[in-house]
Length: 228
Image (cartoon, rainbow, N blue to C red; front, side, top):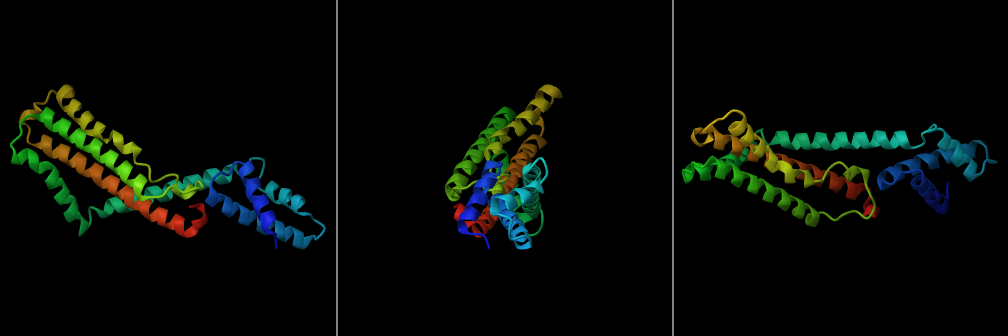
């Protein structure tokens, strides 16, 4: 059984070898400790440092590099999968009712006030999306305490800065319709519906990322409380 000092040495060793994520270090420390204990048990004359080098050599000439890359890819896939699950849920019963309600709320003002200036509609949607993205960033930063230690679990989720550029989607659509195809969007009833649909999808995707992050964050706090 390794001492607390030796466990601390293993943690420092992993950091020196480029493992800066607390959760991944914990995994590697456990792996190294198990390997070292096995080698010392097989040959009691083997000292701690020699056993450590023997176990570490088993990772090959690249050391922990491949492990870090594989874990990062796996973490990213898990985050994206969870986000897709939450996003798809908005199109299944009963949440689809909320999605349709959101779409109607976004499209209603134009029809209600009989707005015919498509450029004004386009600008309003862009401003709304930009403000929504900023709100999401601020809300998440206040709602969730940043961990003291870097966690690989949280690396590929929880970032909402990308949504600041969401207003570019209706921007591209507007310019393509007006400048690309010379469409008179002021007299096309589907223009507002398409813009409302873009905004609805953007909001639902943001909500899906939020719920995915909340679930992953809760798992991280449960598994690695000392990181916080």
